[in-house]
Image (cartoon, rainbow, N blue to C red; front, side, top):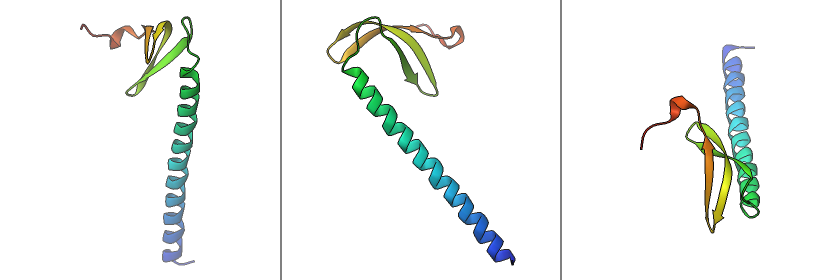
Length: 84
């Protein structure tokens, strides 16, 4: 095997890995969105939920549901809370 063949195999391996990772992210996103949409139809007070925020997520409990809006109590780490 010459150096060009090794380089081509390495390049194809990297591209294949990238394609796999992007496909995996897309599939997970679609599955999560379907789950979220089906849950939003049956959400009720007392349900435990999570709210994704930037690179973190907060867990909370639903207080009330008003049309398209949901009031929740959120539990967050103390070091991530700022004054309003």
